[in-house]
Structures are given as structure tokens and as C-alpha cells.
Figure: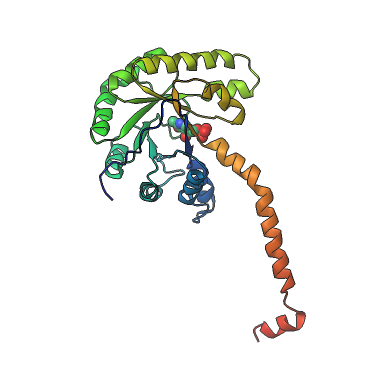
Length: 274
Ligand code: PXP
């Protein structure tokens, strides 16, 4: 694998890019221990459908994406000049992997073994001493580093101090409130707007993500400072909803074909072992 970091061409100012997170394709594959659905094949489908990049979270416990998935993603995406965004905890092990993999981007997230998903943003303000050199090493190797943070002014200021060029704003609270019919989602939306403005004024590129759905994405897409959204769980869930009718029809067709070639009773007696 080449250590040359892949850098895609810059996108125009007002474009909003979509990064598709394929972690839960791996979750489904791992449930049976086989090799399908293959997250790499699904990543290629997502790109063909218009996704601008692929995100995969290599967790410390490897509960979904595995090291080999990352290597294959890196290889296949580089061939298509498509950016790979590696989500990871800021640990020495992950830094080593990122430096050898050389993805286009790394998004640093907090990680707790017992959590179901990334539950909150990084506490950048309290960990500047650790995060600043960590970010610097990745940035110096040519990786575009992003810090996943809650829309809180102190973390945005701190993120800028680390030298990371990008922040990803956590949209989870906004989405949860919106989907629960809690009107205070508007306050959280306002916080996200303010945060995007603040981050952009500090020269940071602004991304956002977590929990986004068809319903909740539009108000976020209106925030002009946001350049990229990373979306996973809903897309993979919705793909099942949208795709199940097609695959059930195909399965019925295969069954009908088999039935049409059915083995007669006389034939089955012949093939039985003596
Ligand atoms: N952005 C970050 C930093 C994340 O940790 C996640 C979840 O892995 C996402 C975006 C995507 O969230 P979801 O799967 O809920 O769309």
C-alpha cells in the first residue's frame, strides 16, 4: 500500500457533500460470520449512486468494520479517486493504522466500549494537551483531520487551537428531539447554526452528522457553512425498507424456477444412496 495520501479535487463553495457510513453493513455481515453483505461492495454502490465519500469507523473492539475492510476500502476507493474518511478514537493504535493506511481524512471521535454508537462529541477543551500533538502528526502526514464535537463554543475554539482543519458537528441531540416531537429541537438547530458560523469564522471546514434521516436532513442542509454530512444508520436501514420487495420477488422467482425443474418421485428414488 502506498503511503501517498489520496486528495480528491476541491468541491465548489456551495456544494454539500454526502459521506456514506457503511459500518452497519459490516454489523450485518458479522452477525452471521460470513462474507456478505460486503461493506466494500456496498461502498462502491453508494459511490455509484452519487455519494461523495465513504466513512468507516474502525472501533477498538472491531465490532463492525475490521482492519481488512479498511485496507480493501482504501485500495478500491483510491482506484476511483473517491475519498475515504476513517473514523477512529485518538489512541496510539489507531494513529499507527491511520498513518500506514493514509486515508484522505480521519475523524477523531470519543469511544466507549459499552456505548451503542458514538454518544457525544470529543471533550477537546479539556484534552488539548493530548489532542494537539496527536492531530499534528496526522496533519503532517497529509491526512485531513476532523474533530467530532458537540455544537459548543468552547470545543469549537479548542478544535481550532489543535490545528485540525475540520470539525464535524454532532447532530444527534437535534435529531432525537425532532423525531420525538420535542419542540426544543429548534433550540438545538439554532445551536448547530451558531456553531457552524463560529467554526467557519475561525477558518474551520464544517461537517455534521449523526442520526440524520430524510426528515431531519433538510434543516441541516440549509446551514450554508456546512460542507459535508456523514450519514450511516438511517441509510442502511432505509435500504432494507426500500429493497426488500425487490429481493423477495427475486427469491420467489428463483423458487419458481426450481419448482419448474422439480425432481420427480421416480428420479429421487434413483439418487438415494443404497
Ligand atoms: N459522524 C460520526 C462522527 C459518527 O460517529 C457517526 C456514527 O458512526 C456518524 C457520523 C453517522 O451516524 P449515523 O450512523 O447515525 O448516521
